[in-house]
Image (cartoon, rainbow over all chains, first blue to last red):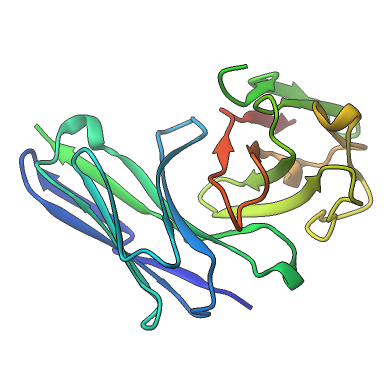
Length: 114
Length: 115
């Protein structure tokens, strides 16, 4: 059974700092990995989808990397801003035999201080 | 529509009553998912619809929970005889084919409070 872990659970940084969020998964046979952000009381917003054949994916100040063999992904946020404050979640889809559903990590709660 | 739409955004109900939660996926998306997020907990998979295939109901916590998807589009999650432990945010997502291939997009959720 796939298990997804995110560390740290919470992070507080001053504005402008570059930061790295970590995601690890136990079963390296994944199709892809998706990063989301969730604002308090809101749904999830998709940030990046990185396919298993890719090593990284970039969108603006965000860069996600994937190392399947070691079961890890990182989300790099450059020049953090207070508006980046949210909970960040990573998720991987189950392999077909287990049905097509996402297994989520427990998230990293990020606070960016002005 | 432009995104996944869920209604109502908030629902307060008395214990023992039935509730219906609605999800309107992105037009053309064949895959639709329901998840539940309890306070301070991670996302829990409930049910998955893919086209005309039989739904994957493996995550439904009890027989009080059911869901349907009419015409391959709108989905309704029904909770019968609600209990206080059903209080949570219920999130719906859709993807153009399935998450093994494509991104999942989530709605804003329905916050259910059972009093």
